[in-house]
Structures are given as C-alpha cells and as structure tokens.
Length: 603
Image (cartoon, rainbow, N blue to C red; front, side, top):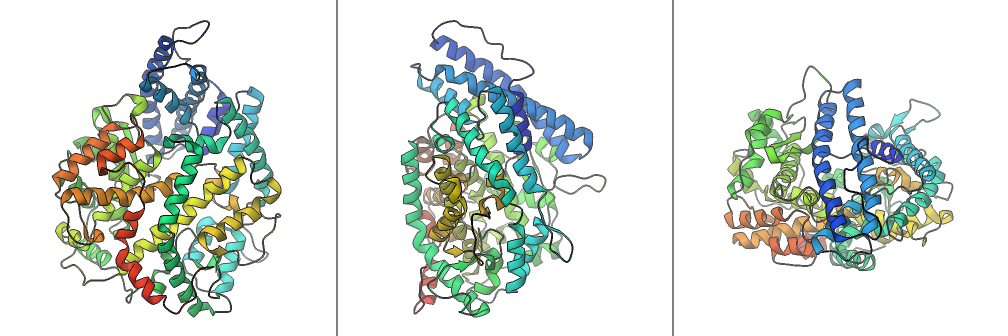
C-alpha cells in the first residue's frame, strides 16, 4: 500500500477549516477569470509540493520512531496538510462555471476530488462532521467482543479464530462477537451521510457517491454501468469457484448446514467479512496442499531482506527502468529494529522523488508472502518515480485503481520459472493448478465484495436505501453478489456494514475492484508486447525491454490525462476489460467446471 493519512487526522484537519499560512494568491474582485484560475493553481501547486515533503518526513519519523513527540509532530503536519486541501477545494468552486483550458480545468477538478470525506462549508456543521468522522473509526479501532465468560477479544484475535478454526460454533461466536461493536455506529453513520452529502453539494456534486465516482472520467451513471459490465464478465468464473468451495464446505460441515443451491453461511470462509477464501486453500486445493516449497527454500538459504528487495527490483531493471537510487537503500526500513517500536505494516513512500528520496517501510520475513508484498510496494515506488516530471497536482495515477493495479503487476510475473531465475527455487515444481487456486481464492473471490461495498453506499448516499433498511439492504447485496448469507437471523437492531473498517472509516472501496481488473489487463497487454507465447499465467515480464518502454510511457503521464489515454499507452486498449482475468485463470476454470459436473450450482 501507499502511505495514507489516518481518518482521525483527516477529520481533525477538516475541523480546522484553514491552513496556518493562507494561500498567497493575488486577490481578485468580480467575476472569475482565466488569469485568476491560473494564479490560484500556481499558488496551490507551490504550497502543495512543500507540504507533501514536510508531511511525508514527519509521518516517516512517526512510523519508524514511535514515541509521543513524533506522533504529535506528525499529527500537526497532517492536520495542516488536510486543512490546506479542504480550503483549496472550497476555493476551487469559484471557477466551476468558467470556461477554461483543458489542463487548467483538470487541475481544478483534481483539487476538489482530493477530498473523499467532504465537510460542509458551514463552520458549525463542519465541526459536527469532524467529530462524527473521528468517533466512528476510533470506536471501530477500539472494538472488542466481551463474552459473558472469558476475556475480551479484539479483531486480530477474532480473525485468528476465523482463519484457523473449523468448528462451526467457535466460528459462529467469533463472527457474531465482532458484530456487537457496530450497532452503536448506526446513528452516527446516518448523521455522517447527511453532513457528507451537504459537503459534496457545497463542492458542486449531488451527493458523496457522485463525488466518489467522479475521478473515473465518465458520468456517475456511466461508471456504475461500467462496474456492472465488468462484474458480468467475471461472474461465471466466480460462480464456478463458489460452487466448488461450497461443495467442499458441505463435505466438512454437512449438507444440512451448507445445502447445494443456497448461499454459503458467511462465517465459514476463513475471513471475518468473507472477502476472500484464502484460508480454505487446503480444503479446496486441486492437488494435495503441503507446505510451500518457496518458504522452505528461503528459510534454508537464510535469504536476507536486502536480497529479497533486490530480487523484486530486478524485474523492473531487466525491463529497462532505472535501478533504485542509493538513497532508497540507505533510508528504507527493511528489518524490524531491536531498539525501538515501528509500524511494520508494509508501505511505499515518496518523500521527495525529485531528489531520489523514495523508500519502503516493512519488517521483512523470508517467505513467499513477503516477497510478493515487496513486489507490490516497489510497483508503487516505480509509479511515483515515473511521473516525477509532472506538476504537483498531476503526480498521481489517473485513478486510484491504476496505482494499485501497477503495484500488483509484477507479482503476476513471479512464476515458478521466475523463482528459479531468482535462485530461490532449485527446480520449479511439476505442473500444478495449486498456484492458480491460491490466487483465485484471494483475487477472484474478492471481486463481488469489492463491488458491493460501494454499491451499498452509493444507494445510501443517493437515498435509494433508507436508514430503516440499512441492514436488510446490506444482506440483500451480500447474497446477490457474493452468494453468502448470515449464519443467524439479522435485523435492523444490527448494523453489519460498519463491522468493516472502510465503512466505519468512510473510505471509497470501488478502486480495489477496478485495480483487480486492471492488474490482469496490464499483465496481458504487456505480455503481448513482450512476445510471450503460451498460457497467460506462465508469462513473466522479466527482461522485456518492449514492455518496459510501454510502462515508462504510461507512468510518465501521471494524472495529466484521462485514464483511457493512460490505458491505451500501456495496452493499446481504451476500455476496462476483465477478460484478461478470465484468460489468466482459464486452466483452473476448466478444472472447476469438471469438478462441478453433477453439482447444483448457483444460489
């Protein structure tokens, strides 16, 4: 992931309402002009560049030297940054009805679209909004299930039970237990929706859902239709995976509890939200699923973190992109220090790419999971370096799905043959569908969940779903898209949507669905450019200079052009296309169809 600003600090910043140092732009009277708009943007970009660097350094220190003072300094810096964003978004609305050159208009839109939690312009309402937007994720973070007998358990402990247990009752208690934390969030969430919608209207958008769909360079209605189209492409693959997983669960728990042709009880999938089924791999694997060969090999060879990062870097360098600068190796955190506490959660950092200051922060372990995470984080780093020539407002991907899609791109090149090139495996394992099943339980299973989170919120924001129907509509979508059902009856006394952090924390989610589609579309496009022959899942981009040139061209665009232009620069295509994922998983899909013969699929 990229370094992000915690919701608490975002909310506090919104309450501030203004920066410590106001914009130094020349004051204009009367009707807005093109000259005024350009002057406004020039001042914003100069200040934004400086604030990003200052905020990044304060955040880095707070994450790698966790003490009270560093946390306070980082909080002050982030509050200043977000107050600046809030102020400039409000001031950008002055130019909404002015005819402007395309680049100027795009930059003004970027300023407004940088806010995903829009606070009302009214000072009193903004203060109330900040309080609610702070309290909800805070309550989520402190949430614990406290049974009548026994100790309280937090989300991490309950998730461990969900991952390892195969006991129906134990899983049910953990699933229900976590959902005791969310009913108190119903009223705050309802008020948040009202206030956020007012903030969106103040910025010129009908509601928050429209604001969240605006960065995708099409009308909100067109984007919603596009999501439906993409989902229709991948649904047959998901349906067959669902059918196979349900059949294996029925073998374990009994058909009376997991009946054919019905949704799967949501607590059986190894994940608190049923958003992936990766922990069921040993139950559903095509071949016997023993210990991971790569983990054993890396442990035996005592592979150091630096070598693992060099391994991930080598794909990019082999495609003709520049090696990571020496400052990356001097300033990144790759091991957990012995002398202090740090935030080990992996993240990529662009502190000042103009001066080669890019880093990752991660407490690396010698295993396959962390090797893939490193590939992901370096994808973010190379994207950050790729658009460094753009002006500050265009230093980002054309939409958030692109950044995450590029981050995942080289993970698909980590084939068994590639691991042999790395010197991490002596000999690739014999042909097996197990690696594809591992990926499918993670990536394919996630797709409907990635759709429904924001589908539900779009309907809440635009009024199609009323407060008195929050929970019922949530489970209708869960069943419609995922084919899962609550294991016990639920009512409007419950509030299950806020048992997921991104709902309690009010973060858009559709970008992850788009990223999953783009990851495979990017991979297919570049594999074609590289001249790969054979099944798509066997393609590695290692050594393809042609693929590297395409990548450099697209990365350099940053956010300066609409996403279809960026997609065309990389793949030659101008439309999202999920058939690349279908092509990648085609061998597994054929196997699933064979396994499902005679079974009652669907729900």
